Amino acid sequence: MTIREAEAQWQGSLKEGSGRLRLGSGVFEGAYSFPSRFENGPGTNPEELIAAAHAGCFSMALSAILGSGGHVPVRIRTVAKVHLRTSTAGPTLTRIDLETEAEIPGLAPEEFQRLAQSAKATCLVSRALAGVADIRLKADLVTDAAAEKRNQEISR
Image (tube, rainbow, N blue to C red; front, side):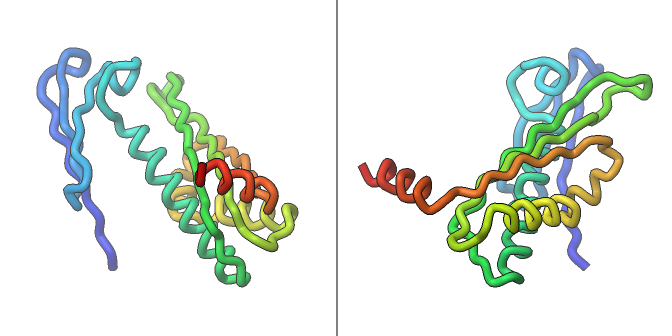
């Protein structure tokens, strides 16, 4: 069984206080506060970390599903946007938008959409976030022509 951990420390009142978040691996540590969470203040917040976890998990799930069908992705880039709103229960994650772009030679766009939806449904973080009422997916398959153009732009 794999166990992952992270740590949070908080000092002071909700609105005037501050804290630090630290991943158990030590690869990330950052400040968080009421302004960084509920406004646009500097620092990170739990929702941003959830977005990072969801983007990473979805990308890996899609890679696994593609690989099981004999399709090795050149690259997968996913952005997750977590929507935090106030509800009668208090602050609530109401929606997550997953936006992924993948370069997979030889894969039909319809098949890519089907596999991306499967990754969204089976990704461990998607399943852990089942309480979020609305998880949306926008998946773009990069065609050979678009990939060639991107590669030419990079090599300039």
